[in-house]
Structure formats: structure tokens, C-alpha cells
Image (cartoon, rainbow, N blue to C red; front, side):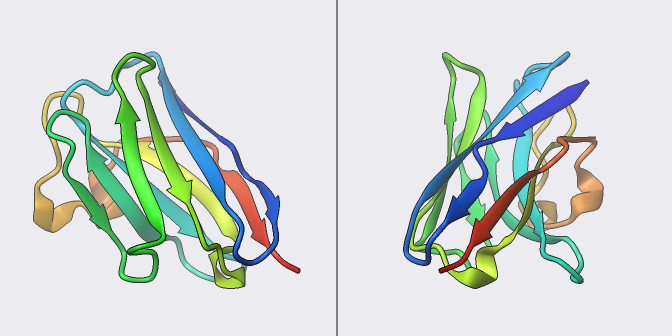
Length: 128
């Protein structure tokens, strides 16, 4: 099972990027898909999550109002639209998926231990 994260790149502050996450060897079905990021010298942190079935979304306070998670049923892909990017958004962004049979409960969506499949990461650099 692999999750393919793509769409990273270099942008100036205030710019936008859209990341994609597509599965290989599984489908997202009823699960929760999360985005996490790890900046140089820092621990990995939760960014956002979306429930594939119901569409509920969850955001870290640091990205609320700027980032939007969504899913495309036809393409079987999850997206992370990132607007108004800041230098502190610079990080390696990972997508991850939970159990194939059920969503992750709300109180645990920020817990990376609840996610069982991970992508390789895509680098986002925000710099002038």
C-alpha cells in the first residue's frame, strides 16, 4: 500500500499550492485522510484531516482559514489547497490514511498513531 503525495514546490509568501494524495493498493473508502508536516529541526505536526465518507474536516489552528482539505470521489484523491502561504509553512508534507473500515474518531484525528498508511512526503518551501 502506498500513498502518493504530490504538488509541492517553491512559492513566495502569500502564494498558493495544491497538494494531492492518491492511494495505490487500497481505496480511501470509509477512512480518514490526514495531512501532517515536518519542518526542519521540528517534530511532525498535524495540519488537517478529512473524513472520506462524510466529508467532515479538521484543521490545526495555524492553518485555519488558509488551508482547505477536500476529496474527489471520481478520482479517488484527496487535496490540500493552501492559500496565503507563510514562511513558517515550509515543511515536508505527508498524507496518511487510517483504517480501511472506519473513520478515525474526532478526538483522535490529530494523533498520527491512528494513521496506518503514509505517503513519502512532498516538500513545500515558502520563501521570498
